[in-house]
Length: 136
Image 1: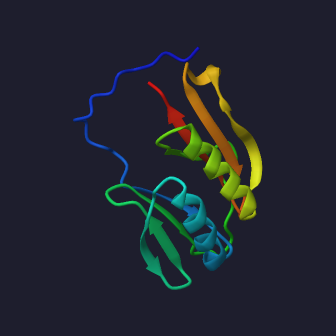
Image 2: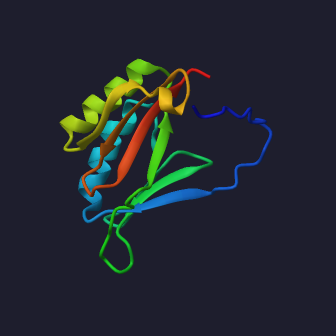
């Protein structure tokens, strides 16, 4: 069982943004616009055909890599907070409806701690994303 660590909310965030690659920015933006709506995450930037960002102070970017050969991160994923279990369920449903592949249906994940409820999908380019509601 994972030991929970209490985090001081005054600690500075050390990451500025996360960026993942896509073969098709337009398709990826349509996918993430729909999926992130379930978590109340809004698009903050769009560079026509090149990249888009979501969030405010800590941003999640999708875009075409410079070398035009995006790859997914095997063994890595990005987890987004959900306000409740219903939002996790809706995230999963909308993601699948928009072309994602299941990587873990919505469920409690006691191996990560009591009250950890999450769903995992692979986006249109194979990047793994998670929606999580953690009751603690």
